[in-house]
Image (tube, rainbow, N blue to C red):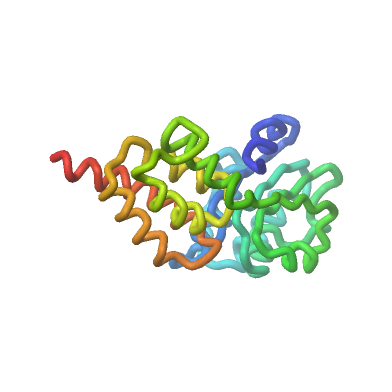
Length: 213
């Protein structure tokens, strides 16, 4: 939803940036500095000077957003430090600028006095199984041999449509062994780690490719 909103509206602004996987990137070495660098590169059309630390990045971001209307999307935020390092203070932004955050943690939005919150409802078990089935089997329910595998896969996707769509598509036409391998990996993932679920989609394709070599 956030990506669609960005694609439909970025041309209305003097500068724009969509920062995907903020949580995952920030956990890597110098991850916050990398996010700051990506933001500045987007806003300045690739004309970005080196950033050596978070404080320097904050100052450069302030200079970049203080004089033009911008659209910034932070995808998958899970800590205030990410918001503070990338966005800084709201008063830096000129009127008409828009900041969109996606997060699973409502308290972060409240802490930063977000003007409008839109809560995406998760699918229930029946809806999830149907969505997975359409992408995996081309019909609204699992084929018989895969019923016992489909239900736990659905459970681990947590009702997240994107996870169900991507994982279902990647497992379409795959062997039971590949499904079992994917399910085993899902069981090792903590709740809410959608990026790791999507990674399994790639791994399932790679497993199948390796077996065909």
